[in-house]
Length: 306
Ligand SMILES: O=P(O)(O)OC[C@H]1O[C@H](O)[C@H](O)[C@@H](O)[C@@H]1O
Figure 1 (cartoon, protein in one colour):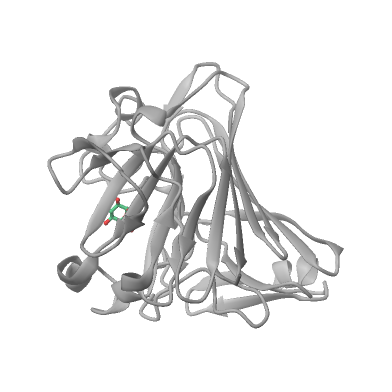
Figure 2: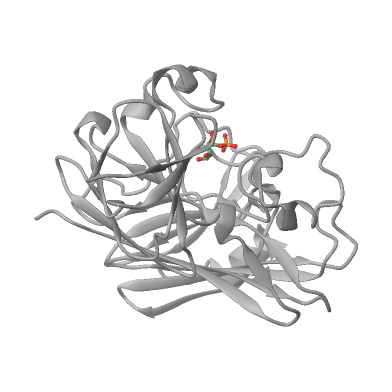
């Protein structure tokens, strides 16, 4: 912490802080506030002045090493959800599937801070990195470099990139598992999914078709296909817009009443105030990355009250 503080803690609007066992960078500039944890490069908070927080994070998160926070934007990599539900090519990259947790392993790993910059009073840019050396990771033997650049300003943007440093093509799935804060889930409409097909994981992984806007009035856990355009979340207070690059799939998830009771670090009624729209490379949209190539998964979030 001392070293981080002397490197980056002197910058105006940048505070290095400890939440129980976890280090975080707290950012304040003229346009927004944000908090990013070094564990998992996980953003937990983003808010613009006079607006409710855009990103939701559970008050029950326990801030322990090895446990991702419940909320914010966890990074899922190199598989999404249950490993057994990933494409064969992704599963084959992982040597041993026994007892592995959902959503890969990098969301609970400690990332390095490469730089923090404030190019102007309205923008702060944080660059985090995770180096995976060849044959050092039980769950990922190929050498890869993961970078996350988070820009905090009037909009929030994340650029998650993977560079394949091995001499073979690698295959992976990924997601920026964003938990959005909503005023009331039963007064929330998701736009941008009309006429898209999706996989319904709650109905035997059947393929279905979305017609019109999506209203959340029950448990929802779906992988939408072909979502390489803006998606909107409209509640009583505002419209949030999610733009992505390098992604053709997104997951829409709300645990609703019964699953909320079973979820870790989640209050029974938290489902009323959150909705996950996860910018992803999931299911058939998994990434095949040649040696020395990089893939960028980018997400930009903005909101307006009109
Ligand atoms: O509890 P976690 O491992 O963080 O997963 C939370 C949720 O993530 C995704 O959205 C999945 O589609 C859900 O099935 C899962 O319950």
